Amino acid sequence: MDLVIGKILKPQGIRGEVKVFPYTDGAEDICKLKRVFIDGAEYKILNARAGDGMAYLSLRGVPDRNAAELLRDKELTLPREEAPEPEEGSYYVADLLGSEIVTDTGKTLGTLKEIRQAATDIYTLETPTGEVLFPAADGVVLSVDVKNKKITVSERRFGEVAVL
Image (cartoon, one colour):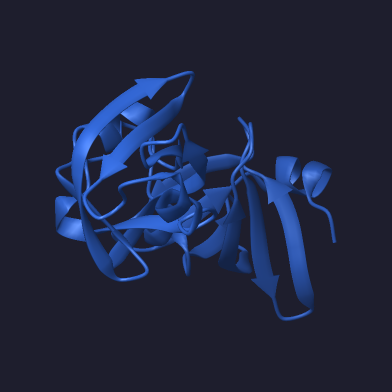
């Protein structure tokens, strides 16, 4: 399974460099890679630097601004086994999707369908009666068991912040 590790925002300069918004813990993670994939095609990273929370990459086969422009809004992927390990308490979105969400009282709420990345990630929960959105804020998510695909939430806090 491939992991999405970032998104190309725009060309940077006239020499084919691209500005990448990282979906990893930091832009430095992307700068350490030797290659990435875009739409299934492999691109060797010729040069990489980080700045202002972004990664700036020069890719083989992207010689100028026009070629870089064609990559605007494309996602960077990497085979799972090549991805850097997330920091303690951090997870890849792909590892969480499909997880069962239960309360600390044992009640099953549904399945995690989507995560919208923001200052506090917004989880979309699929329930038998429709979708419910809730922030993954402190005190809401109590534990994450990636291996067993189970996320435990505080029933009280979930009730306070969930949006139907």
